[in-house]
Image 1 (cartoon, helix red, strand yellow):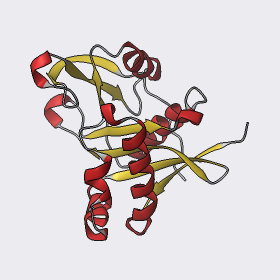
Image 2: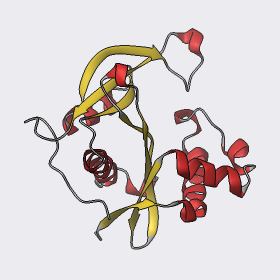
Image 3: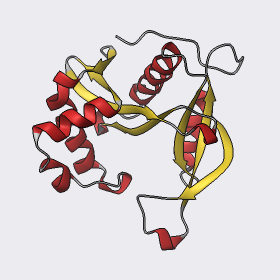
Length: 178
């Protein structure tokens, strides 16, 4: 199997982000608050604005995008000043280490930017996601909120899991984002 490369996108890469974001929304509509139809209608300026609001990391294999995650502003009251969101891996990349590489690159970027903790919201009933985040070193917290991608009346919740960065013995070693 060929190598997975992760790189940060700049504002000029807005079309690359748009394309993979729309792929993610079409493949896994239940995982996102937004819809592919709604976001497909965004104009260039809207996409450029989104690029400036968060760091977008894209995973590629042989030049083909197979995953994406965003690194945005976190909430200090949740012990994190940077937060991962919008993690998605194409079906052909699932189970091959793509998600791990994306989270690793997000953690490295947050650490390089001087942050001490990285947050990641995970559905409390999504055992697979909780196990993945835990295996990476994210620690569960007591901070919960209603799940934003489901009907809030069904009682589903998500919790913020926090990854200590840097010198903490449980932290992920620093890696370089290309």
